[in-house]
Image (tube, rainbow, N blue to C red; front, side, top):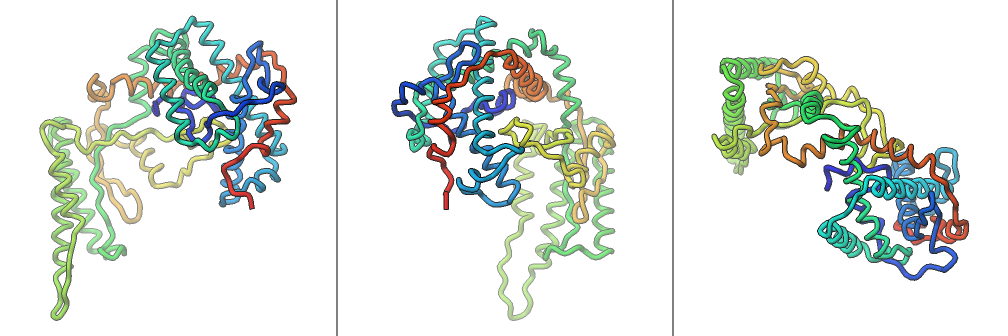
Length: 414
């Protein structure tokens, strides 16, 4: 389920956040329904769940701002985006309830049905998360509400598939998705050469020249191979040679002086054994990495809310390395790259299409993940556009009764 979480509209988690679901005592007759959204009566338990989620987001924002975990009183007394925290949290909960209704209505519109297995899995999911955090039953979220939300996650997947699958009106063809994969991900393999000594200090200038010469020789050794697969295998040979070189240096440094007793354990020994064990003819892709292209922003994988999105650090070494891979690194040509002041890479990029097979990177899990990655924002916008036309009636009694700071929240208030 993790690969599908990004297709959810903000606040609708496919896996159901364990930290926000409990079970429910009876709710007052005047507040069993929190609101009516386009004729759909939203139960109070659902509104409470999203109120808890809104509180969690508010606390997270305050923690990012101040650098310390806030108490309940801290969140209660703050303003968020020029709104009182209570209003901000309840507005979030209202939005998420509308998003929930949008999924129910779209599922009905496409004639969707859940199988008996899916309903059973949803019930199991609800029971699992109930067991994870039984203390939240005090907040009035019933098992029925949990099942409703679990089933909604399955419905949401079906709605997404209907519109953005290979046969969907808003999606793309299989070939187009493969090109999206190739454009946004790279298949690389590299050896990392350290320019630091055993104490973590930069090596001498002479030693650095030796290591850089070794890196250049390694790149030539790889490029002397004709076929891509042979070049990729040669990276393993280079890795083994470098590990043995490091081991020999550490062994020399570890020789005890007169009157000194020394016990030596080298990292190189472990690394070499690991490399040798993965370099086999049954795994031609051992040691390869799939790297995603940089975006201009970064966000938590568990949160699609724009408020959690921050600008990417373009000066970060890893960011620059990714730019080099996609913008400058020639295909099938081993190249020496200065990762930072203390590390040099011998890196090669292979053709990603070679791994787009049913038993490798073109299985259903990857297809689902790539679809969600490509269309998650479009899907979110589609659902939210639907909510703009919804009629809405608030149950003021429920909003007062289940105001966020009347709930039992999971932060220390001091």
